[in-house]
Amino acid sequence: MRRTASARGRRKGLRRRSTVPRRLLRCRRIRAHHTGHNRKPRDRSHWRWRPRPSRQHSQQEHRTMQDTKRPLFARLVLWIPAILAAAAAAEPANGQSASIGADVVSRYVWRGTDFGESMAVQPALTFSMGNLEAGAWGSYSVSKSGADGNESDLWASYTVEAGNGASISLGFTDYYFPAPDAEHGFRNADAHTLELSVGFSGPESLPVTLYGGMLVQGDEDNSVYLEASLPVDAVEGVDLMLVAGMVAGESGFYGTEGAGLVNLGVSAGTEVEITNSFALPVSVSWIVNPDADRAFLVFGVSLVP
Image (cartoon, rainbow, N blue to C red; front, side):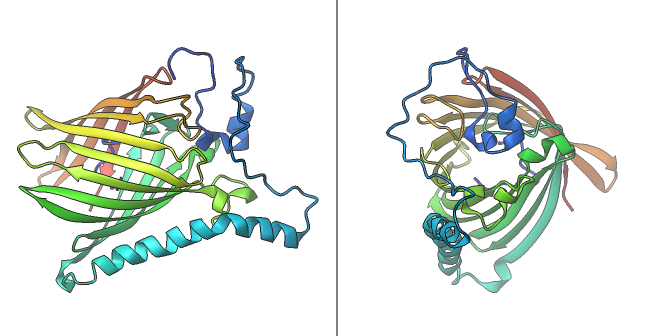
């Protein structure tokens, strides 16, 4: 799903097990702090593991093994944005625009998981050309101990009108996790996770938003995430949003052992008037991950020119 600096609010159970998704366990320091949980290991004999080259491999062998991982990653990164750009090539030039912004949040909680466990700054850069949008989004912990949860994404989406104010969008996101070690360089395909998504925004009479995304690179489970959100016009001057998200099956990326709810919450946003010409958008989100048996309360401030 497209992320912007002004829309952060849209954003296991009781078994004894690690609640840290594989996405975080890639980072050595986090992995070291989440061991020792007593549970019978699952049979992973049918999983297709791609072993990393050992230090005994020559540089040539290392390049060969890396090259076998990169073709799909490279094609998706290069081709999908190009296809989306070609689809929007017929749009008039006067429909082009660009925007920047940033959020400051007390915690970066995404799809029910806390990344970094510290305050974070989240810059955003967005380009629009007709029905095509593309941009970059990041989240950077203000604490050195939370650097393993840093993220820098590239995304693109193309939206078509479906009638009566409804719309359908197709999207692509490259999630990149620049953990502070040499193994997570930008050119290393293992540091990237790619998602293809489809979204539906309903008409004003039923303003529900539906989202479905599948991880197609960087996750051997090819995890599927489904989400529904609904704005609630209940309090004057306050924008309320209800969100429910689930993982469709077993996922090491999201840390689930089967299908389950990972993201239930309500967000409230308003503007604090600073001067007659400037108001500061603020939000509070209460988020529950039933599958991990965790809850969060997140405060955010948006800085948008």
